[in-house]
Length: 225
Image 1 (spheres, rainbow, N blue to C red):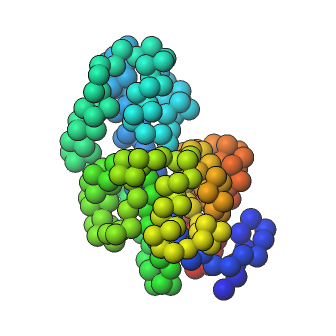
Image 2 (tube, rainbow, N blue to C red):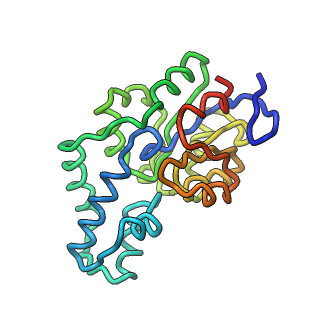
């Protein structure tokens, strides 16, 4: 089956790869506000826009390195402590699914196309946020975390690990991500990419080579569904 992707007729993907935060679950506002609060506690006062520009899409370990360079007086072990406290916050506040994503997942399953999640976040966090929305079981055996494999986007290896597990060539995969970091990871892996720009800058995502959408209702036609 062929479908239009960025003006070209391409075959339907054999593997659809989702980022988690901001693509499956709408966790970015909660995470951003919590991170701002944490950095402020240690002397680094940033606007929400600055926080997104410096830290969006990265791991907390990388956040810690960058924040220290920017003047934050973070204690040793801050990254590990951050996760534990943030998990408690997530469980208390709850995180909704991204609008429209449930319909997309239902259509993909109905079409019989394999799918998975590849995230720079920890698997434990995904279990919390997806589990709150009765979606964790849906991704069993198909979760790839930078914390588990020791490599993070934009390095292509995490995406390539997922493709190899499913026996699919990179050119036959499509990655859906909302951050420049993730979209660049797809480009580095030689995978087609759809950039979800609900909160990201359209031009920044497009510059990575991603086909940009603003709503999940735009996604099914791009996947041939």
